[in-house]
Length: 115
Image 1 (cartoon, helix red, strand yellow):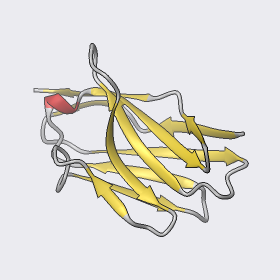
Image 2 (cartoon, rainbow, N blue to C red):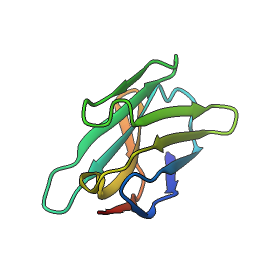
Image 3 (cartoon, rainbow, N blue to C red):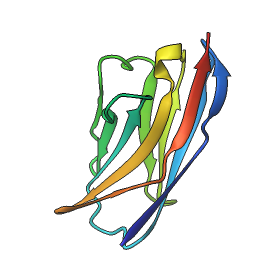
Image 4 (tube, one colour):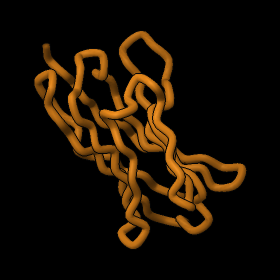
């Protein structure tokens, strides 16, 4: 089992920044990929960014140039650095870990961007 705990969400004005953190614990060996996903009210959960065990990253177009995913394997942490936030970034943000054929989700952290 893998446990994921997100933190760092909050209320911020448009143009502001936040850093989300995801602390992984449990049987975390062989986790090959972490993603950050988000779900806005009334919408489905969507991928925001992905990072592999080798450090390769992917960011969806809507956040490219503003958000950056990173990982600190020594501390079992995954980050999402978010700059120039926009009201449309308002959502619950989830950390997601993929381990072979299994995947795990955190409980989510709310990000609210006011205009």
